[in-house]
Image: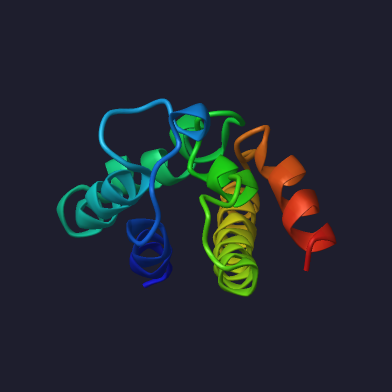
Amino acid sequence: MELQRLAGILDARPTDPAYWRHAGTPAQWLHRVAALAGEDEAAFWRALGSGSMWAGIGSVANQALAVNPGWPEAAWEADQAALREGLARLASALRERAREAGRTSHPDLESWLSIFESSA
């Protein structure tokens, strides 16, 4: 599942408080959301489309803009590229799901998609 892959990427890195505004780490938040898939599907989809996921500074998506914490540059760039690609796939799927349901997705989702696509 894409969320587990994204959480795995984020598990390996330190959490910069300038880029995260919630308790725990972004990876822990994604693991909790992934667990919702089997427990409460409505809560799962709400969380995936929430501000915690997409609303700029302090969101999971914002981790794609984090500053290199001192990793070798090639490793950091590869990690960031994998994170952006995974977030782009997730954002595209959420946008499509919202369109099929006749709803709009999170307002910041389109902005993130533009950022991810321009950095590909």
